Amino acid sequence: MTSSRTAAKAARPAYVCDACGHQPPKWLGRCPECGEWGSVIESTVSTPLGAGRVVSSRLPSEPARPIAQISAAPAKAVPTNVGELDRVLGGGLVPGAVVLLAGEPGVGKSTLLLDVAQQWAAGAGTPSLVVSGEESVSQVRLRAERLGALHDKLYLASESDLSAVLGHLDAVKPGLLIVDSVQTISAPGTEGVSGGVTQVRAVTAALVGVAKERGIATVLVGHVTKDGQVAGPRVLEHLVDVVLHFEGDKHSSLRLVRGVKNRYGAADEVGCFEMNENGITSLPDPSGLFLTRYNEPVPGTCVTVAMEGRRALVTEVQALIGAEVQGSPRRTVSGLDSARLAMVLAVLERRTKQLKLYNREVFAATVGGIRLIEPSADLAMALAVASGGLDLAMAPQLVAIGEVGLTGEIRRVGAVGRRLAEAARLGFKVALVPPGCAPEAPRGIEVIEVSDLRSALQSAARASAAAGGDRQ
Image (cartoon, rainbow, N blue to C red; front, side, top):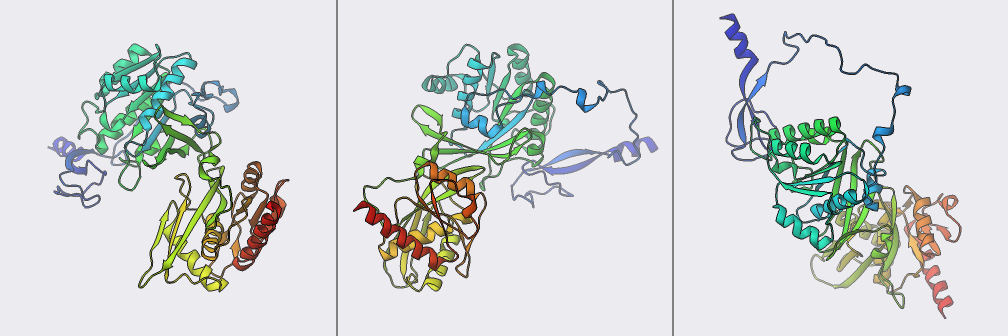
């Protein structure tokens, strides 16, 4: 009788949501955590180790050694020959590392990884294996033919069973494994449906173990939720070594690979790509995408330098001031933060006394599809609005960097030296910056420190007048 009670306590029925991992005390038709219907399933929870169980010691498979005697050669990164991806990864893919690449549907994840697989097969000396659980091998072949990604050492397989995937690894013995996507693979003997929390956790844990044991660089494609987060349990991001987000607007050719977690390099790097009819190509110098070249200066524009990770990107901000309207005027943005635009407009009207914007429509946008959400673009946004409202064109070789406070002061932002160096490299001659930033300026660019919004407008007007005189 005692043994039966112990067994009942050791494996008691429990319930878990197959979508988010929440464990309600009883079965429910709808998960109270994520709101999914029919996702709560019965599970089995074993007794934890602290409840009377004893774990005996055993001899380790490999004894511990002094750290100085351990070679770092097996962990050396192998370049993928896709320059922007190697930048984000910290030099390339490390044998045995597991990378999770997440992004919205249709953004170009499969296209990018197919190019990576072809480059690996051509240059790394070991085969690459692409396992697709969403497309047939014929469909992947059509894309590879369009991209020119045909190589004898690039292998394709269409599988949705983890055992079959492991069988392909035994047969091909690849140096690179790409699984597209991890939500489509199911593990035999594991509860839940494909893509559920339990299945995704089991599949990822198994692939991580195989990758570490055999030294296979592995890339897992992951789905995202409506708010852009990686779908599945949070433990999925803890299991892998690198987490990358693939971002981009379907109406723009610009694509960004942003590092979120990286055990082998910097976690804040950003890689830039351009999507075209021939596939996806790296953009080692993308600043030209975010600028418009004018024959003559145009009111309503101002250039700033944004930081994407550790990379400085020269970006143009445009503003259009509409006619006076009755009621509430529209405030429309594209690529900018609407809340920051509203704040800049309020400060601009209150602190400068030169513009009346409360009854006028304002439209603000960036060029090239880039999104600016950092405060360093406040000054350029304010100058673009003032330029459009006063019909005064900014100097074409002027950049503005700084955060605007509610009292109208210009606050300092990070990486000013790197921003100014990028602006100087592209030929900009004058920069409006917050106080205290002049020592960080490189040669070839004139730095004007501005303490508040009013002095920034005056300095910009003088620079524009001087530029107009030079043109004459």
